[in-house]
Length: 64
Image (tube, rainbow, N blue to C red):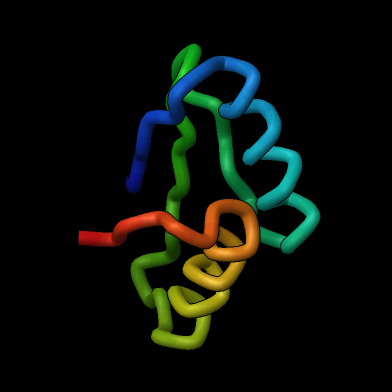
């Protein structure tokens, strides 16, 4: 499972809706936490789709 925190509960719900529109199935696992359960056979193209969806929401996101 991959999880990351957002700055506020509002932003958590907002990014969840955004990612769902991009076809990325995510869950809210805490008041400010988004959870993603990728397949064990996650392919590079699928990871790139997630990255692109996150970039569309927050272009300045740092992935380090």
